[in-house]
Length: 203
Image 1 (cartoon, rainbow, N blue to C red):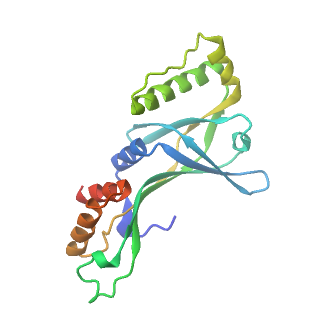
Image 2: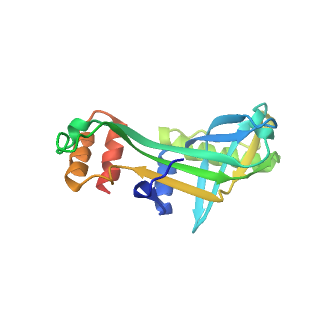
Image 3: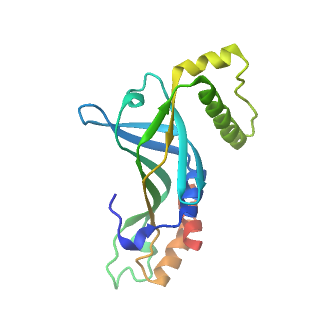
């Protein structure tokens, strides 16, 4: 990822918030021939100091479940178009359009597992995490044969990234008047991504 200094962040609380709001990630690996392969997956996230742990699973037939080597996980945060018309100095500085966004790239290697008890625990925690977001209460029940038998269809992974790049491109390279104008423009849009960017700019 191209990461100019103005947009680079190192505060891991920003990653905490980003992945809490956007837990559906892109996981990229390479196959035996070196060709890239991507999966799109919900994950669970935990951080203890500087140590990040991310968990998830693939469907067992997914080829990525057998890939070895380093992986790249992309956490996609909010994004929004920036019109040059929003800048007070648009004419004097000959401004052009751009895009504001927040994103994280995490690199490292995976530990895979297919132990039934560990998979059952993972699926139970996934259901608790995401059922709450839609006001439901479905739970995985390990003592039910029809639930437990479905674990044979997945492979779990644990990911501890060795490198984390956080890019928050939110007009930091512009003068304060431009930043305020872009923030206010985005806050007034009927667009959840733009409003999320406005909130980041306020923070």
